[in-house]
Image (cartoon, rainbow, N blue to C red; front, top):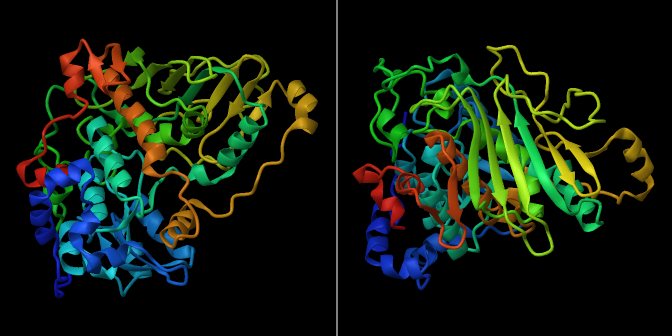
Amino acid sequence: MENQTNKTSLSRRDFLKTGGIAAAGLMTGALTPAEVLGATQRRNATTAPTDRVRLACIGIGNRGGDLVREFGKTGLCDIVALCDVDMDADFCKASIAANPNAKRYRDFRKMFDEIAGEFDAVTVAIPDFAHFPAVMLAMSMGKHVYVEKPLSRTYHETSLMMDMARRNPHLATQVGNQGHSEGNYFQFKAWLDAGIIKDVTAVTAHMNSSRRWHVYDQNIYKWPDAQPLPPNMDWDTWLGTAMWHDFNKVYHPGDWRSWYDFGMGALGDWGAHLIDTVHEFLALGLPYEVEPLLLKGRNDFFFPLSSTIRFRFPKRGNMPPLDLTWYDGVDNIPSVPAGYGVNELDPNIPPSGNNTIQPASLNPGKIIYSKELTFKGGSHGSTLSIIPEEKAREMASSLPEVPVSPSNHYANFLKACRGEEKTRSPFEIHGPLAQVFCLGVIAQRLGRKISFDRHTGTISGDPVANALLAGAPPRAEWQQYYEL
C-alpha cells in the first residue's frame, strides 16, 4: 500500500510552479533549481562523508532489482523508498522483502511530493523512454542521480539532461554502464597514456546474440492489441511522456526495449558496454555521418532482426578520422582479423537475457584497429588483448601496470554523493555516447544515411530525420519536465 505521509514544506507541485515562473533564468543558468528550492532542499544535495546516503529507488524489478541489491551490498546507503508502477508483480518481491521498512510508491511524482526531504539520491531503472522526467525532477529537487543506460531515448532529451547536470555541478550523476568502473576502463586509459593504443582508424563492435524481438512477426502493420492490465498496475504513469498505447505484455515487463517508441534496441542496450571506453578515451564525440549498411527485417514498429551501421568520426586533434561499425543479429557476424584466436567464454560478460534462437558463435565484443596494432576486446569490464598472440607475447614486458579500481560502479556513485570520489560515467561523459546511439537508431528506423552537423546539432537535408532528434511531443501533463 502506498504511504500517506505529510508533505515536505516545498512540494514538487510548488517547485514546478515556482520553476515555471523562473524558466528564463533556468535556461540561461542565472538561477539554478537548488536556488529556487532554498536552503531546506539544498541541504539534501550534499551528504557528509560520515553519513550513509539515503537512497530512493525508482524501478525495483529485473534490472532495478539488481540495483537495489548491489547498492545495498555496499554498506554505504540506506534504501528508504521503493517505487514501481507494478509494485505487486513477482519481480518486485525480492526488493520489498530485503527492505521492509522502505516506504512504497507506484508514482515517483507522488514520492517526491510526500517525502522529498527524506532521501539524498535516486536510482532510475525504468524503460529508456521514461528516464527523462524522473531524472529531471530528481535533479531539480536537489538529488544525486544514478540512471541506467542509455541516458535517454532522444537526442534532445539527452541534451536537456546534460544541461541540467552542468547547471548543478554539486550533484553526482552516474550512468549504469558498470564496466566503466572495471578492468577495461583502467586498462584502456593506461594503455592510451603509455602510447600502446594510438592512431586508431577503425573499430568493429558486435552483439550477435538473439534478442526478444527476433520472434516477432516482421510483417507487422499495426500496434499490438490491448490486453488486460496486471492487477493494480499504474499503466498511465508507465507510459509517462510517450503517446498513448494500450497495455500489451510485449511492452511490459521486459519487451519495451524491442519497440522504437520505448527502447533503443541492441545498439542502445549493449553499445554502452561495448564502445564506452573507445568513445571516451578516443574523444569521439558525435559522428558527422551515420549509414545503415544492412537492415534485415526492418519495419516501422520494432527493431530489425539484423543491423550493420557505420558511424564516421572526423579527425580529433592529433587523432586520425575513425569509422566505427556496429553489427547485431545472429546471422550478421563480422569478419575477424587473422590471429583473432579462440572465441572463449568471458565470465566478465553477462548473458544477453534471451536464448530463443541458437546463440551466435561470437561473444559480444569489439575489435580495435590502429596503424600499428590490433586489439581484441569483450564487453563490460573485459580487458583488451593484443592480437595475434605472438605480438602480445613480444610486447608483454613493455605493457604498463594497470591500476586496480578503487570502487565498483555503485560504491563510486555513493562515494561521489559524499564528496569522496568523482563518478566515472557522469552525464558529461556518457551523454554524447547516448546521443551517438540516438543518431544510430534514427538511421536504423528510417533506413537511410543521415548527415549530422556537429556544430549546430542538426541533421542536414532530411527534415524527417531532424524531427526525430526530439521525437514526438510529450503528453500534456508531462510537458513541464521539459521546462525545468
